[in-house]
Image 1 (cartoon, rainbow, N blue to C red):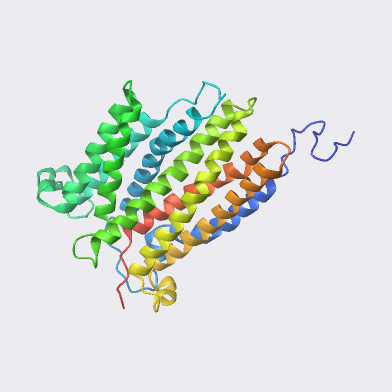
Image 2 (cartoon, rainbow, N blue to C red):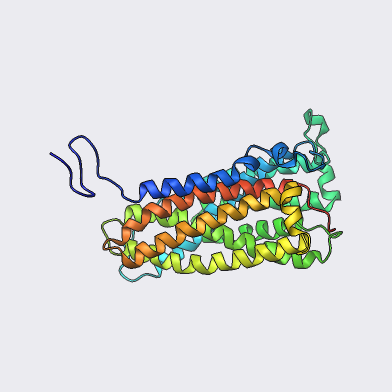
Length: 332
């Protein structure tokens, strides 16, 4: 007996019509990030830029730190959305904030150790000058991130997990300041752009993960599709802000008259180009999910492209981690 369109075969499960297209989009956007995701060396090849010691480790640690930051920020955001919905089920997914903050603490400690050895990979424990962290700006910011994740983990495990918003905000501020040292041209403007960019990105990535987890619990309730729709409306604004701040930050580091050359001739530009390709793919997936929410008979069918969006966003986070570890292009 042949299955009908979208039906179930004798030996197979239900077909998911959107799965093939989502996979195709993911493959295409993954190709754009393939070279930089292999590590700093391919991105640096042929640019004449030096591969600083520990760049790969720094990129990995920052990727973990960004991912760990996104989880609790997204949980706080979507929980607030869920609780404001009339008639929504009381049950919510189990929090991952304590575990995520603990992972972020480990990553922040690793980055602090790199700072304590002059941004070099320590050969032994004796090479790590922890006490010296208080004597430099980068060291103090690294310690602030360590203490921020520790405080956030304790708050998440307490009876008032909402209080972790304050240490998480301190981490975002520290990361924004770290990315723009005083020697840079207009560092406060750069830090402000990074602050808004990182905050919106954390809300988008972490919020989508928690929204999909909630959707799994609320599958039988009409509130599931409503929550995803409410998140999608906010995410559209977040994407616009992320795009605007990203473009402004790029133009500050790569002036418009040289940006085309630097996108292909510098490691930073190459990885930035890969990130742009990935974000464009994520935007397509987000638009696809939004269309399904508005037009499909079952709004929960938007979960398929939304899950593909999560996988693509994981690649964006990885590319962002690598981007922070590469040398900033010279302002020609």
